[in-house]
Image 1 (tube, rainbow, N blue to C red):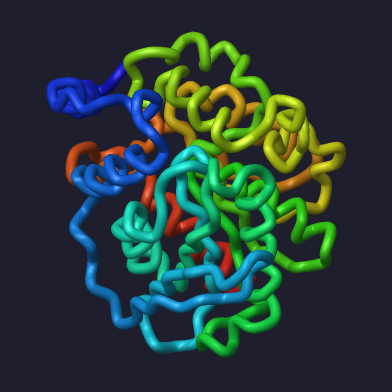
Image 2: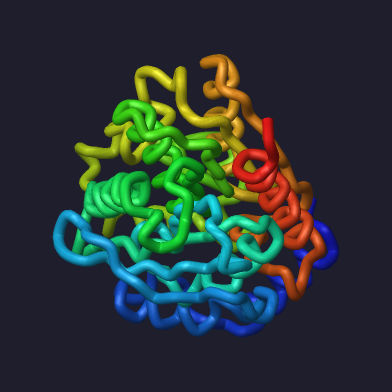
Length: 309
């Protein structure tokens, strides 16, 4: 099922023999993830604007990193990093955010939302919503266009982006696009793909359970803010670009969410990348599918935010 290059990447990871996240403390896992997060990423591309700033959050200032390919007034993508709500941050997704800004011509605002277990559900959701609300009103103070906004993310960040799109609809915040890269959308990790890819495909079942145990109590897992497939109504949310990996435990729930969006009348661009695993979009040095995925995202952003209807 895997492409030769993807299989070679997994072999390299296995030979490195690093301890799995679920054998580490959250603090140790964060260090390990940060040290390895950009090994397979493209080199960090230079941009005219890369700025560390803060915006007000529900529990204090939230750090963001702004990436812009020019000094013009640009539309913006609020980006939520992956990491199971427990690891990851501005540094682990710096290369990817630079590539998205460079390739699309759109500014990218990467949010350093609070992580579990220090800040359990719904802290990450609350931070995302606060950032989106702030940008809808104040983005012009950063030289961005608050009338042309999108939200997106990968993995857990894709979950947060889907939830933010629903909240934006309910609060009257216009979004041009929701970008969902290998998102989690179900409550119980019980789809067929979770069983098929439980071991040996980068994101293992033990790691998923470890992330969720740190992030959310079992009694809260059916909340739509954790499992967007449980939302009552999807009508009226922003158009979606959904990127999925074939050999990913989360692929079935990604397809299911795209299907629900379509049934609700939401325009959906669904891209399924064959023979690759979760997190593939961050492997630009190693597999061509990462570059193809970044190009697809860039085109979706340009079409939604830059091209005149």
